Image 1: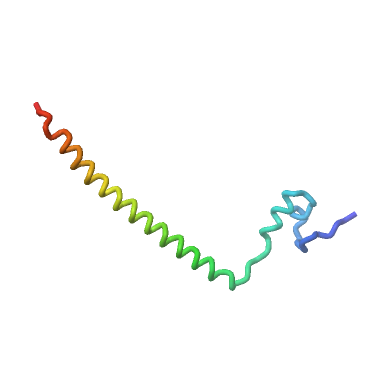
Image 2: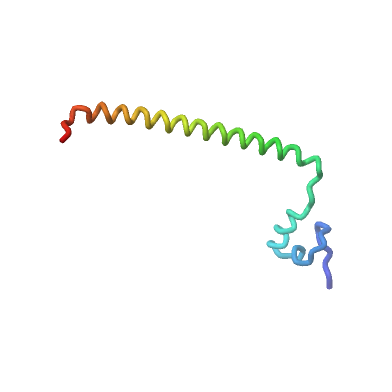
Length: 82
């Protein structure tokens, strides 16, 4: 007794009737060439957001070091040194 695959796939492992085979068969459909453009646009947006976050973190770190150094010098400026 043979069963026909429900999704029209040809791999017997992915159409064995198991849940794992069903999940694996979900990603076997090939994407159209028109779908590549939104992915590129999405990748560009992600890269811009990451770049902005990195710049903000670097600027924030620089300001934190600058202010903490000034704070530490003011705090321990009156301590006599040997």
